[in-house]
Length: 479
Image 1 (cartoon, one colour):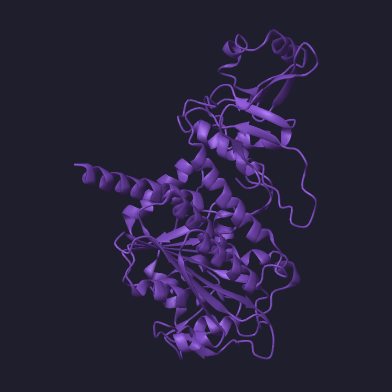
Image 2 (image 1 turned 60 degrees about the vertical axis):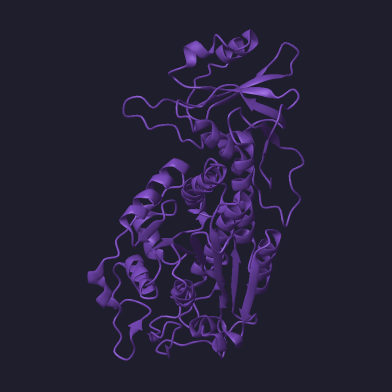
C-alpha cells in the first residue's frame, strides 16, 4: 500500500486499541488490564469522541490505547465512522490492532481500518517524510487486499492533485495516465496538439492551445469487449488562469487542483482494474492548461464541437465544460452502459453544498438512488441535483447553438450540467459529478489537500454490480 497502510497477518507485539463509548464504558473496563483501568481513573478519562488515552503497563511501556467514540443515543450525532483515522497521527509509532469493534454496524471495522490507512497519507514530494508511523494490523474479518486497493488508488490521486502545476502540467499528467494504463495492460493512445483538430476535438484544442504544453486527450481501454461498457471521463485542467477572463490572484491559488476530475477517474480506474471487475473499462482524459497568450481563445468566439453543436464562448473561465463536451461526445459514440464524468466544474456547487458534499446529476432515477446508497455506505457522500429543463433556455446564444455559460448568475451548477447533457444521447445512463477535489481542513481519514471525491462510492457500486456478475459467470461454467 502507498503512504498510509494496514498490515495483514499477526503483527508481533501489536498493542490493542479499545473503542470506548458512553454505552460500553462500564462493561469495557472489565476487559482492560488493571493498570489501564487505574490510569484511566487517575486521568479522569471520559470516552468523548476522539478522546485518546495511551495507557502504560507495569514497566512503564505501552500497554494499550483507549479511543473514545462518544454515543449515538438521543439527539446526539452518531460517531463519525472515519473517526478512527485520527489514531494514525495520534498513536505512538509501532504495531497496533483493534481489540473490539467500533460499533454495531458490521461495516464499522472496515471503515475504521480504511480511515486509518487514508489518514496516514502525507504529501512528501518536496520534504523529508516522517521516519516512523503507527501501523495497523488488518482486523479479522476485514478484506485487507480491498482496503489496500482503495487506499493505494486514493493516495495516488492525492499525490497528483497536490503536486503543483510546474511539476504536474499536461505532459506529467499524461505520463501518469499512460503509466497506469501500462501497469494493468490497458490499450492506450494520446491525441495531441494540432492532431486534435484533425481527429475532431476542436473544443479541447481551443482551450489548451495557448499553453506552452500542448493540449491532449488520453484514451485507454481495459477488459473484455463483451463485458458491460463503463466509461469514465475526467476533467484534466492542470492549471486554470481563467484565460482572458482571468481570475483574481486569490482565486488562482487553488487552481493546481483543477485536474482533480482526471485524478478521480484514474483512481477509480485503478480500483476497477486491480479488482479485475467484469467490465469493459474506458477512460478519457482531456488534458489542458488554460493559459493566457496571443493564441488564447476569446470571449465571443464561436467554435464547433465534436458533436457538431456550435458553441459561443461567453466566458473563458468556463473552460472545463468545453473540454468535457468533446470527450463526452467521443464516449457517447459507442453507447456505454454507464458513463460517468468528474470535474471541478463550478463554484456554484460549493456555494450550494460546501466542499464535502458534491452534487451529482443523473439521467436514471434507479442509478441515482443506487449512487446515493453507495455514497452513504462508503462514507463518501453526494447529493443529487436536478437536470432542470426549464433552465436550459439560460444557455441560449444569438449566433450559435449554445453559449458555454448562462445568461444570469443563478443555478450555475445546474446549467453547467445541462450544457454537458447536450453531448450525451446514446449512453445507457450518464452521471455528472461536480466535485471540489480538495479537503480544506483535516478531517478523520481526510488530510488537508487533494481528494478523489466519489471514487470510493462508485467503486462500491461497481464492485457490487460486476463482482456478482463475475461470480455468476463462474457458477454457470461449473454447472
